[in-house]
Image (cartoon, rainbow over the protein chains, first blue to last red):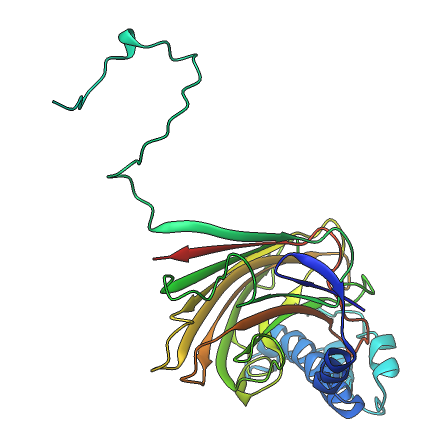
Length: 94
Length: 225
């Protein structure tokens, strides 16, 4: 493993490798980070269609299905690989 | 009497002059201290007090780090995350506690998606690990990024050290729409001990395990005296 220290490339010492590896997130931390990012993206998509839930608007069945699919986005996603492979439902605009 | 003015007509401006005197009266309080250019991939790059010149010299009350073209190694599908950490033992350990806040503005190339948000996902509270400077950095080679980080009084032995960072990046969206992000973060490095090391690293988002800085990254360090 190479690092650049003060502009000079060199191999990491064993102690540095050990310290670096110890500083990296655990598998559980990576999973939670991935879920957090996915939820953030999902929340943005939901927010874009929040107006369709106004009391003076009749929500289409397509929108109802779409928003429920967004809410269920994280269901069953218990590994990083599943999260990476997940695709949001096709966007419904009205 | 010393000459205090010369007329351009009296000297040949195309000549080369071997000046050996001392120039005074010119501003020299903002200086480029050093620069690192990665010619190969690396796990991270760092600056320590053992470097020559030493960026942690007490003559600099403020440091500016300009990061250009810092891309991560790994998947171009996931965005990357530029992080930093500091050391008080010349780089033997990077584990100083830090607390930060982070916000971003976003807008996409289709003219939609505009938002200004506080990102609680990416801030930190007393973390000794590497923490976020630019948590969403484009991974594709055609997606540029850049940031400037200011570190206040790194040599101080009396106070915690403030830092702030401004950056801009482009990220390819899931439907190929390009998103522009403006990232603002600031925080405190919670030690009264003088800093003697700082490192910058790149991590793949989305749980990706690839970590490292791709060849071509540049970091220029300027000091304010």
